[in-house]
Length: 131
Ligand code: HEC
Image 1 (cartoon, rainbow, N blue to C red):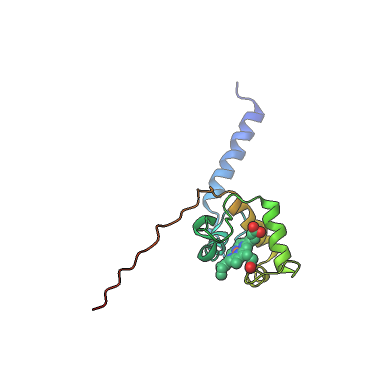
Image 2 (spheres, rainbow, N blue to C red):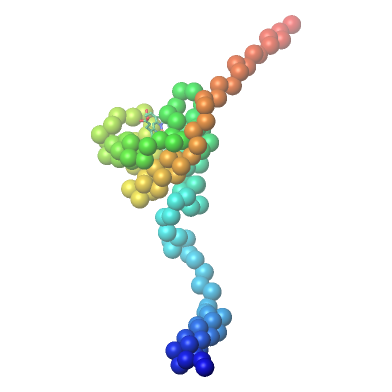
């Protein structure tokens, strides 16, 4: 015999299933996108660092490697740049433009990137060709 509870559960499930088909599809506006790493917003911000710190934070020789960097170290450095506690040539500008939440997301993003051994491209030899 089918119990009353079983029947009402089945009925409730059917109601949920049927009503879910009628749910309107709500479009997501840009400002609705939450900061869950690594989302497109964070990846776009990280891409702006690539010019100096390399793709995915693996800088060529000379600049700081952000890939695999400890999150709390990253955050402390960025906040120090942001509030002027750490002198910098360019980083104070970059850090000032970021919200603290964005810095946190970038910290998680770069910490998750695999650090690769430094790549030193072979020196380019330019052949003098003067007549
Ligand atoms: C134009 C080149 C340039 C760009 C673009 C750039 N950086 Fe930097 N970054 C530097 C330089 C140079 C330093 C050393 C401090 C200074 O002189 O500003 C540095 C230092 C840092 C440090 C400290 C590293 C350490 O070992 O203490 C962090 C963290 C950092 N950058 C993160 C970022 C992030 C995140 C972005 C992108 C939002 C970014 N940088 C974009 C050039 C750049």
